[in-house]
Each structure stands twice: as C-alpha cells, then as structure tokens.
Amino acid sequence: MYKLILLFIVLSHAFTAQANTLHYEKIIFSAHTFSYTVINDEAVTYQQYVSLTTDDDWLSVMGERLKRFKPDQYEREAFLRTVYYEAKRAGLDPQLILSIIQVESGFKKYAISHAGARGYMQIMPFWVETIGDHKHNLFHLRVNLRYGCMILRHYLDKENGDYFRALGRYNGSLGQSSYPQMVFNLWFGVWHYSNSTA
Image 1: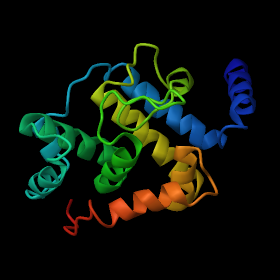
Image 2: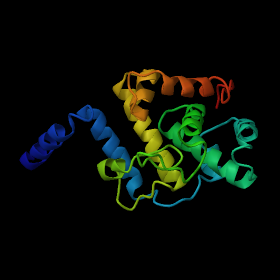
Image 3: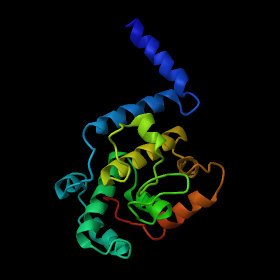
Image 4: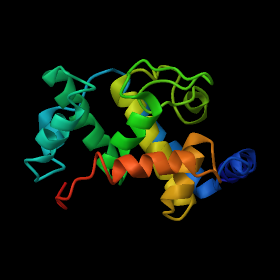
C-alpha cells in the first residue's frame, strides 16, 4: 500500500505542469484501454456503429458532404463510422470532430505538419510516449481518432466545457481566436446536423 501511495505522489508531481492530475490519470487509464485493443488500421464495423445510434440518416447526410474529400464510397463510410464511434465514445459531437479534421489535415490520412503532428487529427508523437503504447501508429485510422478524441475530451474537462479554450489547447494556440473560430465556422456551418438523435 505504501508503494502505491508513493507511486501516485511521484506521478502527480511529474505531470502537474502538463495537466490536472485527476484528469491526467483519467486520460492514462483511457489510453491503456486501447493500448491492447486498437493497434491496427481497421475501421469501425457497421454493427459497432449502429450500436451507438438510432439515426438512419447521419451516415448518408455526412457521406454526401464528405464526398469531395473522399470520393470512394467504401472508404468514406468506413471513415465516417469510425469518426462517429470514437467521438461518441469520448462524449463528443461527431460533427465537431469532422470540423477539426478538416482544419487540421483536410481529411488527409498521412498529413504531417511542420511540427511533426500526424494523421487526420494531427497528433504529436509525444502523446504516444505520454499516454499510449510504442506500437501505436498515428497514421492508423482508429489510433489517430482515438488519440484525438481522447485529447480533446481531456482539454474540455480541464476547461470545464469551454470549447473555445479547449480547442486552443488542442491546437497549441490557447488565447488566440483564429483556430477555434475556423473550427466553429465548420461545425455550425458545413457539418451542422440538426437531428438530435445523432
């Protein structure tokens, strides 16, 4: 018991500068949940997708909007199912995640920023060392979306639900308005979806 308490104290001090310890511990436990289960590039199955929704229209409506970025129907639907699943799993709006992806990578799976961020949601490699597993490939669909949604959820919790500040943290531009505003414009414009069951 003493060793466990000591380990908790050491972890708390080590990560105080980066995040609130309780939120950090939550993000670590979430990471280990997928460390051993999501290490491939497979999309969410249709059965997994329908287990989270009763809305028959979301996939087709979003599919039409995404067509110019992903012309192949099979790839497009697999991508959307996975976005929906991972967003809902993290308690996030799938349309918000689509907006972030459009701003971050333009829906390019293998996008790399000048700072080295990778994939659809532009995840920095240090997150693999911080909360993940060395086997994780940030270009893999499920892995990239799981990290991105989990990181955004963490920042939303840290900012008490303030999307403006959470998005600023996600992008590394806290206090500046341009990035959150771009995401908001897409979220409430291009990707807006009014069916409340989605």
